Length: 284
Image (cartoon, rainbow, N blue to C red; front, side, top):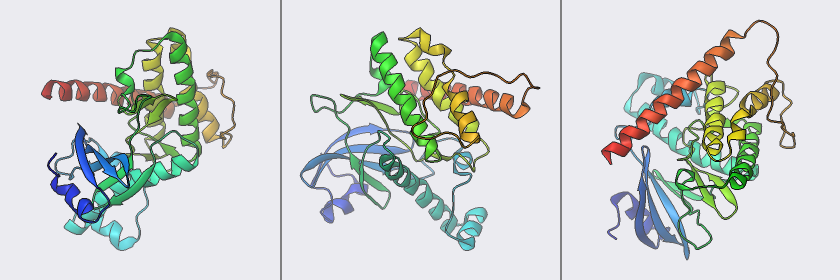
């Protein structure tokens, strides 16, 4: 195929040998299948902020560190330099998150380079060597749903142990290969300890997975992993080896207003995402 303008510099530098096809176009990036170093990989081309349709980006970026006071002031003033810094932080966040999570044992794609807004990364494939399908396009048996849900909860636990929350986790941001679910798309990854909306986003992520897998195994709908993990995290008792029960006993004390508001906010996020996906599907 014709080489996209944003990929031409990587071709010129020998980082990409061939652009094979366009894989998908998402709300924050276009993804291409490429050949690099003799392997089939994918190149994620981030869209400019003015073209990106990801909503509430500032809310996700809360708690992310900047390099110094000058950079923070530039971003606050929304100068051209400040907007450029925001773009760099947005793009580098995914590279940093993927590298960090891979080291922690989370099932995410490996990364190779991130240059000028292009992330060269592993292409997740199925047993036949084809591009792995999105979870939302996979039909599961009850046994498969229970097993994959167990794997997903373990990976979400490992993520939280590193201090990260996906922030936009759903059946559309998970691929399924021969070994189960693989988590993708993390430019909006949230700092669990420094973002005021962290608990609401975490609850939404976990409950999105519960809802999806619960279609095939209704017993999963009764699990309370979001509340259980978050309570352990707040108490500094969550570790990669923590054995989760999927149950959670509510306190007999007066209701925690903040927790109630977090639940409401999580539900609002989920409904917003559902309507956005319907809208995007209609436009396509």
